[in-house]
Image (tube, rainbow, N blue to C red; front, side, top):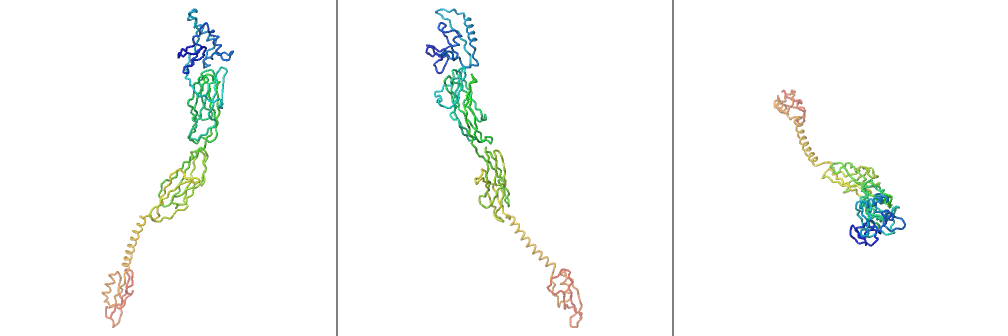
Length: 437
């Protein structure tokens, strides 16, 4: 039996590695008796892979840091001389072997390996390093804004503990996440890497088929690398943002509204633009009627009113104008247009007051006109002094004319012109016929 110096595990004689699954220590190089062990140089030669069918273990991993055989043997001999221990039967001379100093490797033990028939890729070097990788699926479909995951299996097919790095080629680096991005694998063991592919919801994520590769390579032997091709189908999506301006307006006439459309999707968008009023009283048209937008582009359309009800008086009417694309309502709030009557209440009140003022003014004008055009009074058979006084009070000028007749009393008015009751202007001369006896 061989006892492991690291974990005290009892191993079968001739074991190369410690059978403890949590240890895996290399036993071939520990305390080999000089009587039974070959020289350091021959032991190292037996450990080299591919020589004479030897069953001894391979050299420790990390071929880049291993020491040449001759240097290891020379160093071991120097160490033996330094000890100066004379071999005896009771105290056999130990063989000192130079051990490689490196950081401990965390080994992942996976119970369930990938099926042998899984389609994948393998790579192997002449110095005993080997890897095999396979994807659970190689045709992926994703909608921008979401992610798709696929499992990558990595198997260590070589004779050394492997540190394996993984990357994705052919896709933007911010589209992929590897969990984990690197694994440590014991001999004949397998690990899993979850490949997450998330496409951002952006106009730059063009729809279509993309090809990519998942690559795994050995840090110990960079020539050992495997790549698995895969395809990613990026779906198209539409995201149209619309705004209608002005959103709130009050007017006697329905104004022209401006509809602004922005394509936030990743594919071209074409639609016929329409507009309608919630109460059906308006007839609306869009100009242009059809709009085509590429990803990230913007366009505007004018929404005009071709027919609207005539609102002379009464209460305002509220119209809710909603725009649509190919008959489907756009994701924007409707514009609220308040149609005001052409004749408002204050205008009616003002008109009533104006009519009253006009009536009063007309009455005053008529009255003033009557005062300026008095009626000629009847002064027949009146004495000339009385007739003259009456005319003078009305602003008329009496003009006397003598009439000789023995039958007419002296100073009596026997005729006048203009006739009585006729309206004349102030200052008009009124002829009076006065008897002279």
